[in-house]
Image (cartoon, rainbow, N blue to C red; front, side, top):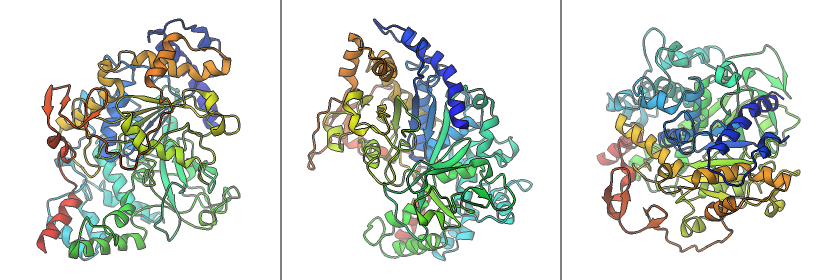
Length: 603
């Protein structure tokens, strides 16, 4: 009810913003009364993928490209026209940091005053690397509690360090894990320093009182995590997705199918009824953003499994022993105890309802790296969704949005509505990552995917690619110079806007056509010739190319992919194929990779 009422009030702002965008988009033969006289509000959402700092910084630039407060933003006004905004992992950091600073513009918070917040330089890295030896010995001897003391800001000032934050939570009777340390580390690095110990007391439900949210000036935010069954390391597309929004924490997925007031997480409940004293403060803001990016669980499956060959010999032995210890003691995931879904009559999973603890981890580990499933549900009836894919150091190939399409057919995804999405070979062969690609352009072709009369929204898929900066940095890259940070953000701006219209002069108008398409269909209004041409240029036409042996070129041109030389348009630098192949190695390697490479070198 709270969300519904909030969205209704938000539509007073978005309708005016959409109308303003359309007035300035250069649309021809369009009757603006379609919007001003409509009884149905257009529902637009933005979704930002995970991918660590790469996703956060690229996403920041993409968001700036949609913001009418940014200088010369071709798509300025799309942000103001949107009802929802979602993120996971690095995308969740972006949203959290902006909302807890009252949603300033990216120009204001990063580019104009780069060192007050979002300081990602080596001197402010998450791990204190001053004593390699003790850190190495902690890992070799499986001493987790000694290892975490190497977190920067572990001891700081007068009881303001991470150790004090963790101790206070434990003293209150709640279990802690590496996610608590991780979340508070991110807060120390990314929140303003002089704000109550880096917002140590801020809660996710506090967003309700932040003026930009209370006044419906910015979209309704949500971040996601993935639920894991007790005593299991298995996760896949059929794992339940849990979302956190300012009012509730819960899931539309079949196994959970219920929501809990996020303000009272930490309260013992049975079937939603409090069993004792109501608790507040468990929804610590840093803990929530840490939960959405708690990816440590995957390392046992990807670095130290029997078939993994990243490390061998004693290096793999010590790594596996350390990670196994963390996994067996539930240190590598986020612990929500008491379980807010305990005894829920709406849940269909005994694994959820009978467990005293809810186990959550990084929202993108199952493959759906863009938080679309919980966003594109029939209950929210969206018309248009922008899906920003900043996944992977090998550049996005459509896999993230393909996962959403596939997930709607799983047991858990029964509420998700997603248009038809082709396979990876089609994305590569037809260059669907080269510019914004629209999926689901014609509602009448989506009846088989509709649920309870709700048609899937149009999805505008926008993939990370290089325009002025090689933004395919590794997810494990933990430090960025100020120049690198600005390069990533600037390139994100270019990605969303096609170098501010250099490779898409019609983009602003065509986005306007996508905004109004579902409303036109509801009212039986035919598209203008201009919009028909836009859809011919940007919509996936249904053609597929499914070839398991297809080899996708690795370099970029203005409108596609090539194996020849390529150009970074911003600085006019020509780079050969051999050079681009190593572009993902920009900057500092993860401290953890350094450690284990050093161990490996000893044997």
